[in-house]
Image 1 (cartoon, rainbow, N blue to C red):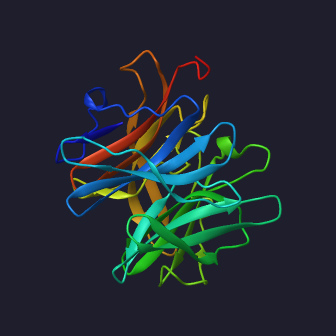
Image 2: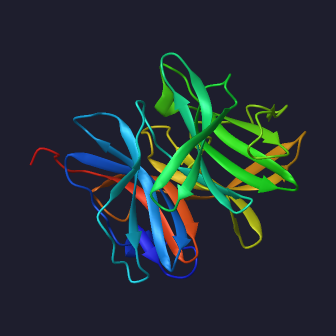
Length: 268
């Protein structure tokens, strides 16, 4: 779902629906504004393959959009393409978990928007999902949810790492880890952003259902020794009887995107 309204919007009933074919789902939308267009990157999973890859659509300011194009596939699941920029280059980070390894991976954009190459691995000793990079006070911070092999979708522990350089292989685990232990808001739900001079971290509510809703959590204190946040607003899909969850929130230059879980029969 998307809205090109100029400002960050939470008027979700007015959002434009973009619905995938019934043989797949789309999730984790992240938006980047380039060349007077919006590029919405997301996880695409075809049910018959059961393996996520990263695709994107182009959208103009009137909401007209292209067919999706695949930009990155691996031999393991890809999702949650969280972006950051450094020295005029664009990257995204991804928590990779397989039976034999776990790490946070960095992919670099070689030719926007369709060419992304593996760059490096960082934080290789802790299995993490929904990794989100944020720059603050001359430090780079990674927020990521601890993954449990038996309960990944219900992960409740949010971890924080910091470094002087986003491409460094040397990241320090925050002494307060896990900084949040609450399945109702720990798991990242999009890029960290500023709203009314407040730093907002979107967090997923996975208590009764994975991706049931999300909250806006204001970061009160963030440094190498302390972390504090408080929930200031909560959203759930109460405007449409066919929706059973909302899961990710992102914004860039006039475009707000979220994803929603909808009731439908994939076989009809």
